[in-house]
Image (cartoon, rainbow, N blue to C red; front, side, top):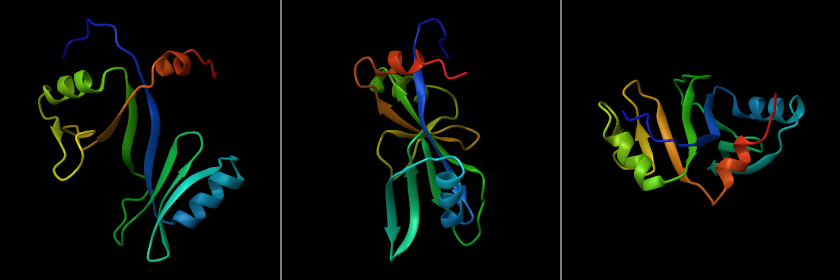
Amino acid sequence: MSMMTKKASYLEHAAVTVADIDWSLKFFQEVLGMAETRRKEKDGELQQVWLKGGLQLVAAPEDPAAGRGHHLGIVVQDFKAALQEMLACDGVHAMEGKPEKWVQLPDGLVLELFQEKPGAIEKVLAIEVK
């Protein structure tokens, strides 16, 4: 891995598998004030929901690994270069059956890559939140 070139990126969202998506949605909306931005349903059942602030809730299957991370959505400056560099690392691979923006790390962590809109990373990283 080359660490010499100055690069920048930011976490666009984190997706987490939850045992009870309805309870979790209510919790994040009512306790933390996170507004729903979109949802995905199947046969009338809520499967996924995205909240403003970068949180995606994913309904656990019958045998859940609730509370475990599902994937990290990361905005990168140069999509093609970042993807090429990631795939050159030992154990990192594209995910079969998924678009090229999805990669899996050796420990199983999944990343979803997004191309930066010009200047977005610099603006996001300039915000002092703590």
